[in-house]
Length: 322
Image (cartoon, rainbow, N blue to C red; front, side):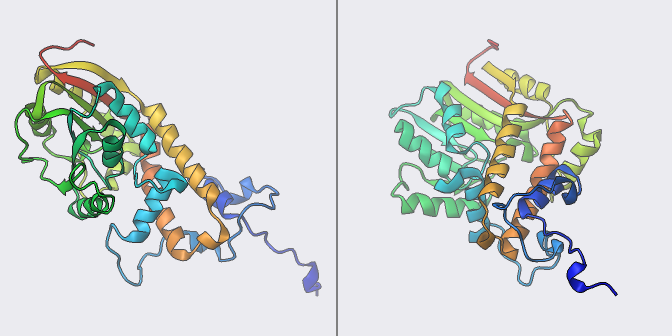
């Protein structure tokens, strides 16, 4: 009988290696490297999977999830941004709209309000934030109150099909990655047009299909199946036609998929790279894997070439000037 000291133990695989292997679809053993600085989880490999039946369901926008998302997308500064690109990307999108302290702005995808408040601070504008998710809107407005910005950057929830916006009220409207979720995208755009002042700016980013047949792609179908209510995306051409149909001056209609994809992948790599052994509680790992599964489906859909990240910049007017 062999001495127990001579039996080779299976090496413990660092979490970052295991996560990377799962992300790219290979066996963790294929990526093992000698790295004494990496983090090793002592638990069994099953610990990196989601618990199918959590002991006590949490509200969707619970503090742990918000903390995870702000750390993932906002970095160590925790700047209350929960979308790729952080504050820098939101401010970059806003620059062509020539904002200043005389302008009134509407943020139609306020989310947690980090970008809304940043626009108010950076450009001195009066800005209203609208967020579709009522619970998230409430939390976002609480932060505006906390920072003394409840008058300059208030945030509330809204119905996309009946927003109740005043005609010709806003100098600029910005909308990030949300219109694809709404059934009546044409109605949303019409309300935006009516709410803009003459020559007012509209800046939008959204997910769009390459063509009408794109949902037939397996990676796209898998991404869409991950939603509770499957969204019906427009193609890039449909967006162009509908913006021009409203008699808006279409300045920019471009595919920024590669840029967005790199932003997302970089944020995930940076986040996982900062994890310490103390961070890797079961709750955090379960949260990480749940979010990662959703984002992996989107990344794969983008890599198929059939889902694109679209940026549109238009002004209220009468013809396309692309």
